[in-house]
Image 1 (cartoon, rainbow, N blue to C red):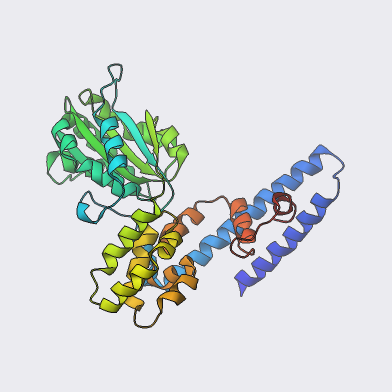
Image 2 (cartoon, rainbow, N blue to C red):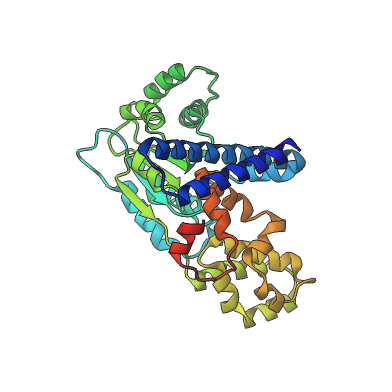
Length: 359
């Protein structure tokens, strides 16, 4: 009840802001006051969004756990299930094995792309490549995720190098120990799924790495170009969507594991239409394959083509966690714009000036 009242109060403040923006304010002081009011309004909306998310987590504990667990990864991969990334892998491997005579610290290479496009998969492919194994004395994989826990990340690196449990709770001590074990070692460190854009955090984390041997590399996967900049990346590799043929191959590989002969036959008739729904995202191709396997008895393939990707994903929790993280990291003002845009139907064309004026 109190949250509802707060939302009504925010709506009244928003109406006041809209009225004030419509009129010409008389002086700079009034305009600064209005800007402060808008900032407070955005902060209040963000705070209420956080409360709503926490209530959702309490009501749907399993889903909340899934959203969290989806953000962790390991270096293991079944390469027989991967299609369309051979060229990308070769590019990353070449970058990682390149020598830079002037480097005094490990060079950073970033893989940047939207959620679900296959950044982690590409990093796994490069990490397990034979040339990489031969080129680096030590390979380390760390799943960073949203929470940039400096102590946990450093301990994971130390344990990977020493093969021992790090019984430390002090960051300074573990960094000194890590610096010693990395001294003169040529290593590859993968930091998967980095969100933190704080330069000072990266400055602290990388201090022990400077003792390593020349040629050491750090491979970062992230959705944020700013992360690539903050980490001082020598190369930034922007991932491109898969072709429709590769998307179809991914979907088909999943469906062929099912025992439905009728599904196999029907699928060949509409392969190109299914591939177009993926829009180049491997995550979408896999999700559609799983939907076909689990719903083949209750959903005709023609019906499937009429369903939006979002509606298919809602119940099996495939794409939602990935998109939800991107939404959570938007500024409060951008969230308002995002919600406003959601009013428009799919493929609806609107004028950008209308969006600016009424969003």
